[in-house]
Image (cartoon, rainbow, N blue to C red; front, side):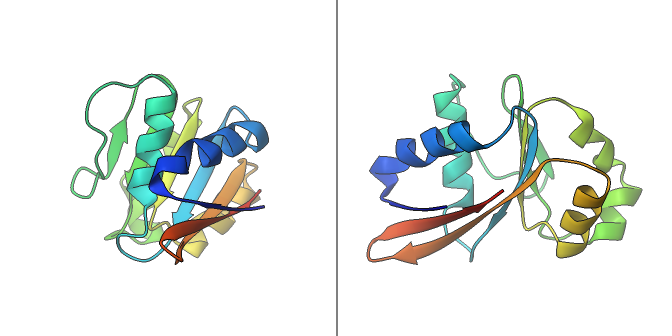
Length: 135
C-alpha cells in the first residue's frame, strides 16, 4: 500500500496503519536521514493520546510512549549487538514497536520466529512524503 501525505495529513497514514496492522507488530521504518521516521512515530503517539515530547531514542536506544507504543533507534547497533544487549525481549511487550535503522538480519530473524513484522519506507515526493507500507 502507498500513501502520499504532507506533514499536516499524517492522520491519513496513522488511520491506514490502524486499519492494516495487527494489535501487536514490529514496524521497521526505513528512509534517509530526516525522512520522517520519528515524525510518523510522533503522529502515532499523538493519535494514541500520548502527551509530551516524542523524540528519537538515538542515545537511549528505546523510548516507551504510554501503553503499547515503543520506539527504537538502532543506528549504531548491528543484529548481534542488539541480541547481546537483551533488547530482543522487549518485543514480547504487547503493542507496536517502531524500529528505526533496523537491520535486514534482525527483520529476517523476527519474521522467522513468528513476529508480525511490517515495513514502512518513507521517501520525499513533491514536497510531501510517500509511505510504502508492506505487511
